[in-house]
Length: 496
Ligand code: UTP
Image 1 (cartoon, rainbow, N blue to C red):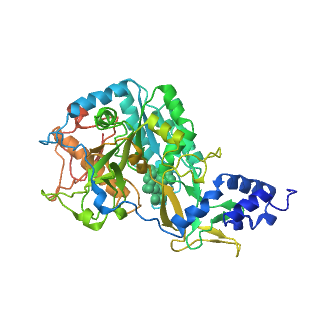
Image 2: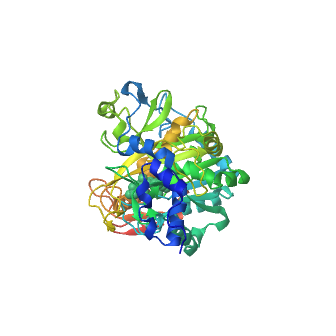
Image 3: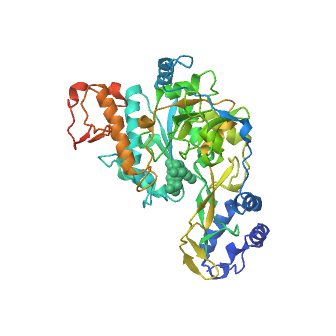
């Protein structure tokens, strides 16, 4: 039993000043351990900045600062590098990227701290099946690229995996149980991102999970730029001689975790600062809900789908292609020293919000609000509530908001089928089913390029399922025709 019947007065006054005194309303009835846990959680939150954040993002909605006249399409390196007038020397950059890999200057980085609420899977999303036939977990799908690239370039490619407090222990356990997906445990580093309190949408009050626990959510994939620094990952990279970070998200098993062409462009293209570069795919139609790369106020940036005015989203070039067609697929190259600079000079950060586990505030990207259903403990009725409709605002930061903080930033176009099949939902769009189809289509194209007959229906859809491990091939050029079937039969499942 604790002797302190009342909460420490400095904590009470901090919370009162922030309009959040309800956090301690069950203090009298809490056990000593629960009081200690609550105090620790309270200490990790920057309460002074909350009233302003709540006014701006929770009870209010932030205005978009960029006027449509200032927005133009972002230039990009087209995937067809032979287009007259826009051609570029792909093999030169590929060789340059390969050199960096051979020198051990590249690390892989995966953000896997999300809650995966849409998928509704009980466990870290990386443990979810990603292989179209094998059901190989998403973590293993990405790890296989690293295994293959390490073999090809003869150097270790360290892998940094960002978790969140919610899934950190389960993620580490997953790797232990799965033999580190074939990688050396010394070359994988796990670290947790920061969290933000979740807010009641109507009142802006911080929600409680339990009488002694504030409801929190991970602070978005943008939190990775801060967590890389606070965790010591950046220093670990420096010690290993790593200069560039290849950023991919856990839910896209098709991502080329290591892509020498992209690495070379990021590090050496004349218009790249080597700070942060991005991959894009052409949008399917004006209404597709992806962020687009645009240039505004002289800077490349990603405009969220909802922030691009309709007339711009629908604007077409003379050849009828979309003017703003550069859809963001959340694949980036990031300079190690760029992350260090952001964190050391605090540029672009409000310094607001919950801090990292050591209590440092520091650099922070702008927040975005998301209206979500968040179960909570109702302090007045003393009952847990599972809301039927969105009741809460979560504040998150997005990694692409760092792009305009670069001195200059390049965009590289890639093929959707070749690199983008995220698993976000259990069914429908961006689901395991669509992912399996895209994996098959990519594999089919590779196989057809080397002469294998793949069954297709009259619309061109594959009549079979194919999964190719990156350890077998990272592209059609790696396929060994002597070991391939001459043809695949309709209905067949082929794992290579
Ligand atoms: P999403 O935006 O799809 O979010 O994350 P999510 O949490 O996985 O899924 P929903 O929205 O709850 O259904 C895209 C990527 O960013 C990572 C995710 O793990 C995924 O790789 N992410 C997202 C983080 O690492 N941290 C976050 O706070 C949010």
